[in-house]
Amino acid sequence: MKLDLLYFSWVREAVGRDGEVVELPTGVATVDDLLAWLAARGEGYGVFATTERLRCAIDQTFAPLSTPIGDAREVAIFPPVTGG
Image (cartoon, rainbow, N blue to C red; front, side, top):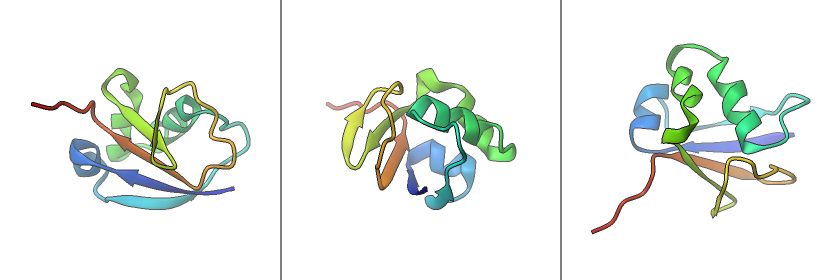
């Protein structure tokens, strides 16, 4: 399954791109699985190993890391949001 990934803020800086399209391997079922798979890719992708510093949205809806990816078309990954 192909999935659009979007990276924001220091996540984008660490990876060196603002997004990419990936083919999900078998076994990647949740956002947590996705982050572990990305972290294993090495280089700047190591940023995904520290999941407590990350938030995500699936098809533009905030989602916990335990959320199944299902038939999603897009996952955005970003640092916690603050306001003021």
